[in-house]
Amino acid sequence: MNLVLLGPPGAGKGTQGDRLAGECRVPKYATGDILREAVREGTELGREAKGYMERGELVPDELVLALVREALAGSEAEGGFILDGFPRTVAQAEGLRRLLEERGCELDAVVYFDVPEAELLRRLSGRRVCSGCGAVFNVTSGLEAAAETCARCGGELETREDDKPETVLNRLRVYRESTMPLLAWYRKDSGLLRELVAVGSVEEVYENLRGAIGCS
Ligand code: AP5
Image: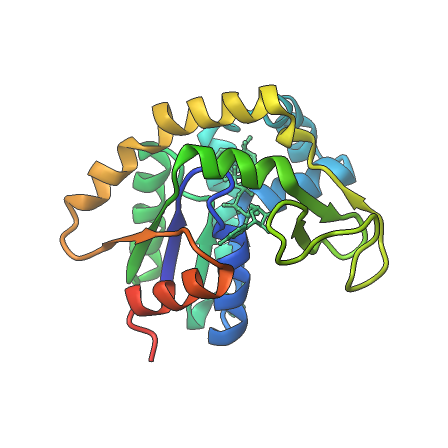
């Protein structure tokens, strides 16, 4: 299964992608996670990406395409993969198509997570991430009412730098301008785009996701 998870900031791509990757035993590559790691480690990629990420803008296509090419080059992606947060522009989608052609494979589905903006703002304002293990919680959902420490490893919970209200508004604007056109782009590929109403509990959305991709 070669899958793309597409949707606005806070739509639940990471939450659902992690579950699906665990169940299907395929690697999940989240470009946001890879870029944040590069920023933390102070690599050349991280230094180039940092400013864009802090402003809630997209990192240039060529940098992101290079990191996806490297991620997919590993043998662990041979049995399938999940891409979370990539592609995000038509140029990235064209780059991915070329990359997969070179590998002699193609996408099986692109799942679009549809969530109303008010719910996105609620989720993003309540998101907390463990500085130790990276687990994601939400203080507003009531499902995993986070304390100040991670329920899994005891690490400190932090608010993501780009979840500040002014940055969130910019990320949503960038999403509408640069990423939403991908919906029309993938709609032309008949049968590839699956539109998922991604509201309800995490468990409900997961069952809908499994149904959308024909997971038995
Ligand atoms: P990235 O990390 O990809 O951020 P994003 O797409 O904005 O997505 P998020 O991580 O905010 O949301 P999500 O959909 O994964 O939601 P989550 O599951 O966490 O990108 C960050 C930055 O990196 C970009 O701004 C850009 O600068 C750069 N970048 C990354 N990829 C790039 C690319 N391809 N090209 C260029 N630049 C790129 O859930 C959110 C919260 O809601 C959590 O608290 C969760 O617990 C909660 N939640 C989840 N599901 C539910 C539910 N059903 N009900 C209630 N709460 C829920």
